[in-house]
Image (cartoon, rainbow, N blue to C red; front, side, top):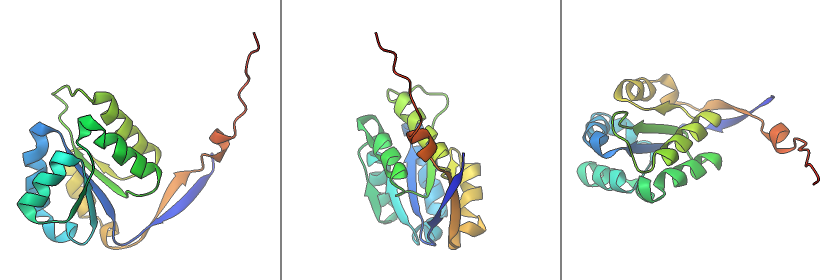
Amino acid sequence: MSKVFRTVDVKKNIALVAHDNKKSELLAWVKANKEILSQHNLFATGTTGLIIQNETGLDITSFKSGPLGGDQQLGATIVNFGLDILIFFWDPLESQPHDPDVKALLRIATLYNIPSATNKSTADFIISSSYMNTCYDLALYDHAEYNNRKIDIKKE
């Protein structure tokens, strides 16, 4: 499969998401990295976005809460090249009613080669990367081949 590239601007579009048991941890991480994050466009699912905005004063574009479709909204934004980084502190020990949506979001982020952090350590690596303050050519698989594949329809 061939690759295409899209340029990620210096000012990144960053999604911030956390399951209920991880919201405090994400909030602490955001507060610790507020200066860097304030230089970028921030997006979040509903409750997480409201908490971050109220506690830090950062400007957040909020989607619906995850169980109400927010994870799917973020996935659609990735597909339309509107997000550059996904920071998602998810709880691996707690089953969620919207687990299929969470899995779909992580799959789409991987498919579109979006840098993704699912824990604080990985988020620290991403936020401290030299790519945070420069443009970056993100490699994507060209899905034209997949979209144009021949499908044999069996006639009954």
